[in-house]
Amino acid sequence: PKITFTDYDLHDRIVEATIDDSVMETAVRKGIPGIIGECGGSLSCATCHVFVDENDLALLPPMTEMEDEMLWGAAVDRQANSRLSCQLRVCDGVDLHVTTPETQV
Ligand code: FES
Image 1 (tube, rainbow, N blue to C red):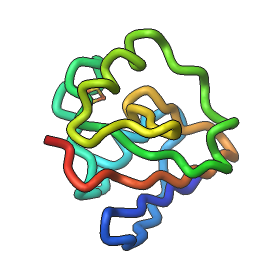
Image 2: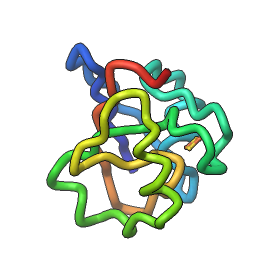
Image 3: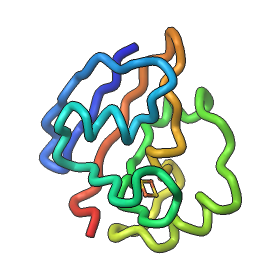
């Protein structure tokens, strides 16, 4: 599956992702600059914050209470389409498009 990362300057980076990796892991592995993933995916940093394309929101698993809580601490204010990308698994046949915030710290 492909993941498109759009950065704050609206530059797109399209990468091939591995099934079962998280979107955060994919970004870190591919050197996407807008995602840090400091805590390694344990829901304790919020430096993996992304804005999910409206068309893709329905493809995602519901947010856990923990993710919801952590999102309030993100460096850039959360929006209705905010998610923590370490909680999003790459699924077979599901391409995703996310936009990274201006900063993660
Ligand atoms: Fe830390 Fe997602 S990587 S909360």
